[in-house]
Image (cartoon, rainbow, N blue to C red):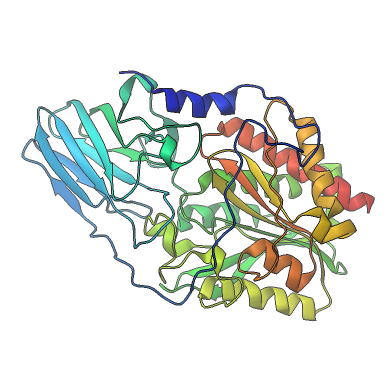
Length: 428
């Protein structure tokens, strides 16, 4: 079996060195990912959500499939014969962004090679499979074990993805995890937060509760009790967007490090982090929405959802305490790395730090194309970046990472992004 052209193009875009844009906002459209269009205004009152059945599918061949764990997504299994199985992946509700998350375990009493076909509800095969023996450490499936059916067209977007994907793997008595991306559930994210909170200048505490009563956890990095300038960071409004979380994780670890730069930065600035904005959606294996059936990054105007409301209330509280928010970032994932700042004609000198930051990251990491798509629309606030700027005056950005960007590069990008932001803020 061989890779299709589209997956080769997608991953090739990530791995190959690309020429940087001459300016942050090119005068003409270049090859490469051009980003998404303007976000439509949509209602954010609760909509019904279909909770997936959780359990184990037992096949006649004594092969088992399970979605009975946090972060799982599997909605149906059929045994087709000749060691071939079709799996159905459906969304929590519709309409929905095409981010067809899947995650399941498979094992058998008769060790052998099987083929699994992934079939989706009103979508295509966006995410390249990751395999794990323990549900913690994942690696991409070998390309020789991956086959596509009905390839897509173009380089980016859901139309570029194949209609179906087939996976061929060896299974035995010990389960194997197969997942769209690495699993970072609310439990594992909290473990990471707790590990950092062993440092004396880091604490974490609850700022609200979700629909399913999970805590909205905030991490506070505060070394100087007299600081009144702060950076606000959020991540994972959309459950499948793991690459954005990984960059955010490296970003925060760098700011929390023992480097001289980080120590000096922390004497002047606090950092507030909500690393998991949508714990219900993550633990329920959602494609996009929270348990209210809503895209959280459309609810920063009306605040109908408890998750956005929790962050709004926290920011208002800190502003009332006299805090000045000097920078805000919302980490996401999409088809390729791209920055979504507010257009310089709108944000003016206040937003210069955002563009300097992008340029500095690009200069230090020239092997990866810098895609930048500014927005002139700040109202309705609706998305986090706009709310951060309009209501709290902070230069803000949506920082998106490619689904297939190599993980080592993600870690380096998070480190470089933190170092450059610390340097720019200290210079100011």
